[in-house]
Image (cartoon, rainbow, N blue to C red):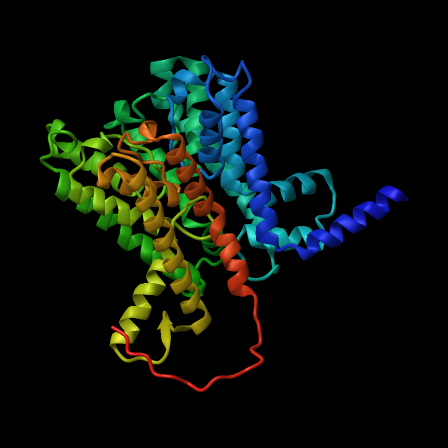
Length: 449
């Protein structure tokens, strides 16, 4: 009786706390647990500091991919397993994973669980949440298992069957969850022209980053005319960004002796351009030396990392749909249109205001991060800006600056990675909270632009 009373009291108190804050606390708890596991003596081949463990755990849970040490050399197979689990939980979402476990045990989720699940999946309502979770489970299992088996064709001949199987499974999990972690010291540079790697890895992070809502919509609605506005905008944005990023990378780096210039044939250069162009927005893998990029390419990458992937996905950034709506709103303003619309559907003012808020806060976080790191470090400005954008977009690409961070710098990047992953949840909650003004004021005139 006492236990039941305490449980009810705790449940009532939790309901008073905003779901995004609860989710943020759960993610923080998972990060601390991961750091503790990394500190176990059999998790690493050499001692690591608490700072190393906390940074790695944060990077894994936020599916970023930034690392302060060589993952393949420092972590044992147990440590790599812990890393893969943290990536999977961070990419899948804690509430999604909890619902899957409860469903497997035949236990009810409850209204509170559905509220937290709605926030974790960035949904506006609780309608068909269970169906979406089932879709997520099917997509994750199919993609990661299939990806691991196909990657065996490239990794097993080099590493042997069992080691190749583990490395294939690890990279499949890392790719689908858009984490960018690799057990190879130089990333995937050694497989830069491998056709299997260049097809499977991008396929995994593109599917994982496009969003489960889009995948469910495509699976249910065979005709593109029946797809939702969200799906159409997401697919349109992706169809534009991929050719843009691939083509721009090839154009800017074609003769760079540190990147594409080392390859002889145009086919090899295009293959590397394809991989590096599509991975930049969120995945964080590399098949070329990121530190050797031209400054113009670095600026291109920063913009792509800040855009990111799709909502309700394993990707980060402000999201493709946010970017597209922002462009549409800008075009509508210059055309003097009073209503924003796309594909025969209108986009409400509330959505436009949310886009403005998300973009403004994202730019502010990145600006503050760049300012503080520049003020406290002696590194090149471009390297610092690249690192901050990669952390906020939870991408994981680095120009080799991660290992040069001071303790303060690490703390800043940890905070930025965490905000990049769970910050939009909290922001979305407050944006969705309606308040009725008690006092109305007369309209004033402000001169803008």
